[in-house]
Image (cartoon, rainbow, N blue to C red; front, side, top):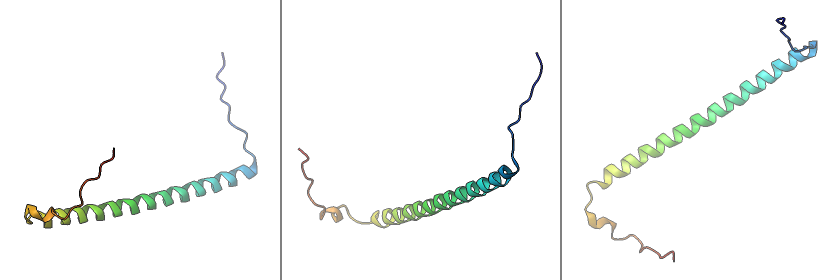
Length: 75
């Protein structure tokens, strides 16, 4: 048995294509990262709003929920 290592054939034009593909992949990853950051910031804002709403409703009497609509039957 012999140890043979095979490498793919690379043509001169393929190197620039690989670089372009890498740049496109990098831009795509950066775009996704920005979207994830935006969603994270939105979720943090929602969490803060909920915390504020809960904090302000803790001091209210239980009768403050009497204006809620009656439950509807799903049957």
